[in-house]
Image 1 (cartoon, rainbow, N blue to C red):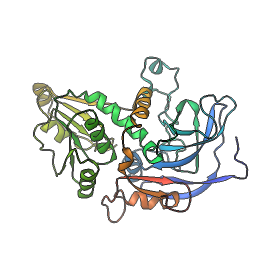
Image 2 (cartoon, rainbow, N blue to C red; image 1 turned 90 degrees about the horizontal axis):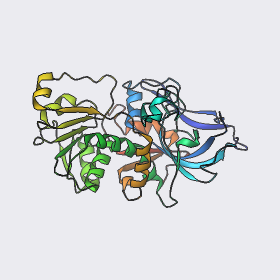
Image 3 (cartoon, helix red, strand yellow; image 1 turned 45 degrees about the vertical axis):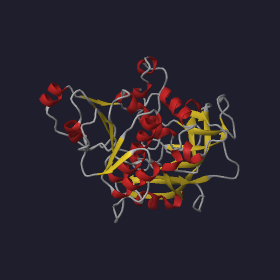
Image 4 (spheres, rainbow, N blue to C red; image 1 turned 90 degrees about the vertical axis):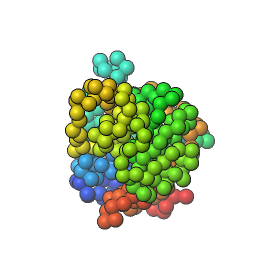
Length: 345
């Protein structure tokens, strides 16, 4: 597969903690007949990308970042059957082989062959003009689905995996800790299902944004989680496990969702045992939940979370809006990066 007349593309590269650059690289070359070349429409800056740049999540130096992406099929390999050029697609970046014991047991999210194949972490990602993907990981989009909404299908799949572990009953009081895009998506889904979630956020900008985007959700700007003994706490920050265990109701559930490499917590085993607290992590989402997320996206206005759309050349500005830089405060919700030289409409 080649794009005639194009031998290089722009991309956003992670070098080391705090070091990010935009550079030209050769066009990606297919490694097999079932791969497709995707012309990227937009790629979201994920909390994982932010953690990588902060040195809080491991990634391979020199890797092209980005895994929340939507785009159009540009070229296909000789054996590709599921998509064709021109199709708008969203990419499932979580690799699974389909053949190992875990995959055969319906546990593809724990496939042991992911190492070296995690998009935007240890293999080339989608903060670029083009990205390669095996057709197994491409999902065609309805023609009328806005790209700003489609770019959030992957984080929605993450949310669904954690909500599935939380398993809220209709009368459960659910507290979502953190009003970043993941926390807001979790609250949005819960509200859409008829729950009345509460959302707690320490950053004033994110609290105000969540109040604007989610008028039917109780959003609190608070420095702690003292929110009236919830039955379920979903910690999207990755750093509030200890506090969540303290405030959850006896018999309640704490879902550890945010991933911080260095985050630790000291818990009282006796308190967990005597109060009957369930602490659970969902891990990566299974492929079936990516399909569910694609279906939910038809009617869930996730594009409301997108506050900025910037060209790849302004990737550093995009990360600065998310609290990386001299100001170190949040100034955005979801930031999307797009190919080209001008800010997208």
